[in-house]
Length: 112
Image (cartoon, rainbow, N blue to C red; front, side, top):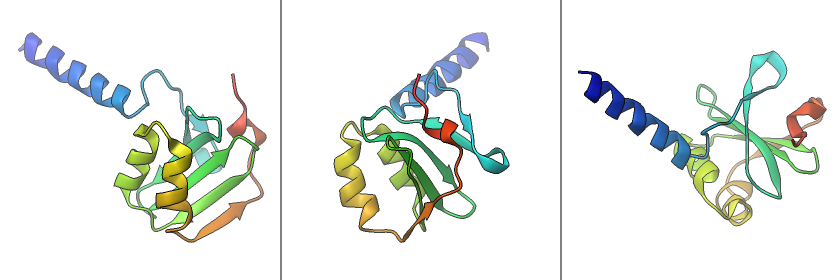
């Protein structure tokens, strides 16, 4: 039983590492929404709200945009792919309506 639980735990950690989430601490945006750090020169953080299918991306410049109607798989692919800028331009920017978020906390975009 212990061996099986260990295997499950290792599998979950491996999936998290593949998705780029291992070792990350979520950032808190307004209303307690969690943002996850994105390893990229263009992007700093992203969050996905499954209930509204909304992807919010914080750029390195500090600008934040919310994209409506995004499928969860698109969000997961965005967090996993190496060339996030190319993926963003091809699969997100031109495919979903967006809205600039002006009232965002500057801490969303701070780097370590």
